[in-house]
Image 1: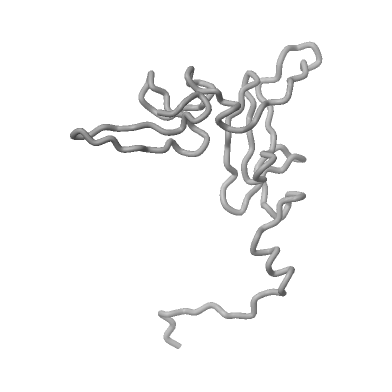
Image 2: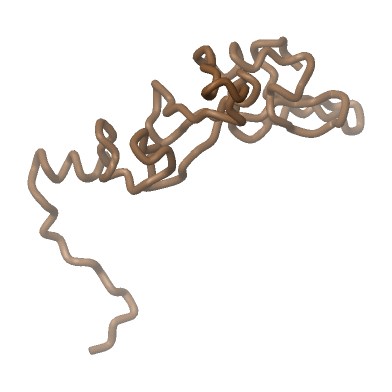
Length: 141
């Protein structure tokens, strides 16, 4: 479904009705295998256009050939990053509370990543820490 720039959806037909499904984030539907796959593995998908990221030109690794893969923090969301394999991007997500750290080239606590602040932390800095206490509904003291 869609085109080379929008290849993350597919239709499943049951009893004459078409149902639209989305592949998980960063994956594209592969009509050859009937499953969601990395966009660079799907012949009908333009991985760079679909993911909105182009891998920078690779440098030769001291004359020993191209690096196996390179990682880059997403310019739009510091919790996501791209791994470039054979100069094609794959999107990864660090998960809640984590962000891609350019210095260590891995996911790290979001508070350790420059330029990527926790939204709750930003609010506490702006208005001060919350003084409310947790509510324990099953507490019998």
